[in-house]
Figure (tube, rainbow, N blue to C red):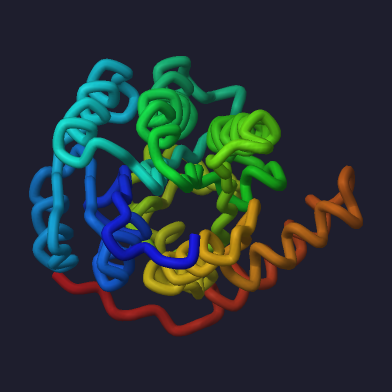
Length: 284
């Protein structure tokens, strides 16, 4: 897909982070947008910042199949077709598997995995109506490797990867391509909004974990969006985002059963540097 001008681009999780950056990037390309999120205020702000020539916004809980299908119907009524569908909405959960509640499993799978399934299935008829179309499903580097206290998140993102790769094979020879995106550490609010119970070191200090994440996450949402847009244009089937994503991908190829030792060593050093650094004074 060499041009996005006048193409209809559907983005879930568009109220902030990568979703917002994607909306702004595609608006700059001259695309017509269909944006969805549960955050009404954030979604309205995204639409305003994007300034697309035509923009449909809808409050949609992607874990709700009926709501996603209704959104697809609204896109059909407004545009008649979809050229790019980006299933980007996602949430995070930090807890050991032994202590994770079933309600938390259902919550994260409902959004991260079923949200992708709902978005793909609901929009496939509109994608088939296009001369050329792409479905982009956002997984994670945690869809490439597993990590302690991220088991539920890992399960959801590995599932996205498997689903998307199977779809890719099934779409071979058609006008639709399926792309799986694996971002590394991106400076978004996903950890801030996570269900946080414990990190890999047994700590339950959410604020500390967010500060550590800020030290590690080096890629901006804007850079992530740029990589996705370029990847679609270059007809890539898998997109890694951030230097850490390339390192993790290589590591799991070379050490498929023992990569955790390397990850643990690197993370311990990074957290150690954070602990040794002067901390800002508390404000009261």
